[in-house]
Every structure is written in structure tokens, then in C-alpha cells.
Length: 195
Image 1 (tube, rainbow, N blue to C red):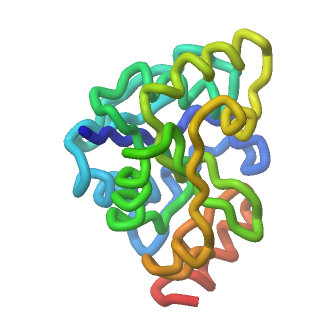
Image 2 (image 1 turned 45 degrees about the vertical axis):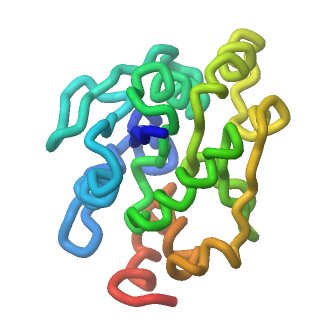
């Protein structure tokens, strides 16, 4: 099965003052540059969903359903992706790694969606999805149901546990994201070393 990867950048970042979080600098690089470097190790079909302008070998794909949140971004990614499996990440996750994302993609050979769940809940924006998710997503969007986790009841789902994630590094670091300026400041504790 072939792999694509998509970084979702179309969010409003209301808790971050509307700032484009993909441009935040972590360990000397923008989060987006860090993500693209990891994802390009897995595929040459990398998408930036929610942006008009391409970036460093990644295709820019405008949202097909603006205002529908991450589920709309996922629909856009799966529609534009060339691969059978699409790795999807939020643009504010600086510590994702190619080995972790390759593992999620490999698990998608026996499931429609592969998603970590930790003490912080589900992580639908650090996950792998197959084309089989497109029809259920379209149905959810048509019904005005925009919660990513609602998709799990509609597809064959594979949960990834913290213990499984920890084989690739501390899951708190791998899945760290930046929703607020305070969380961005808190990343300093995760930078440059394992927890």
C-alpha cells in the first residue's frame, strides 16, 4: 500500500491569537519544516492542507469544506492524497518522527483508521487513515457532526496505546502540541531531551 502524508494548517488558532502555529520555532526550525523533514522520509506525496502556497516539496491543498474543522481538513487530505494510506498531523506538533508515523501507517493495513489514545485522550491529528474513511467522513459532515472521534464508530479502528508509542520515544514528547502561548513556552521542557 502506498503512503501519503498531510499536515493540517487550516485552523483558526483562536487560543493562539490567530497566529500560524506551523511557523513557530522549535529547536531552531519552524514546526512545519521539522514535520516536512520527517514526513518526506516516508513519502514524496506530502500535502499542506488549508494553505494556498506550496512549501519545500509539499503540495498546497485548499480546504474543500472551510469551517468544518479538522474533520473537513481530513476529508480534503484523503481526497487529494495519492496514497492508499494518509498520515495526518496537526501543524502544531513539533516532535513527530518518521518511525512513529511509519508504524501508524503499517497498522492501517488492517484498519481504516489508526489513532493513538493516551491519558490526554484520542489524538486524531497524529493518525493514519485509509480511503475507506472518505464516505463516512462525507456523511458526518453532511449531518453537521464535526467531531473527529465520531468517525471511529463508523470505520474499522485500531487504537495505539501509550506503551506502544513509547517504543518510539516518550509519548508525551511525540504527541506534544501547541494550542496556547503557555503550551509553547512549556515546550522548552521537552526540547532537546527525552522526559
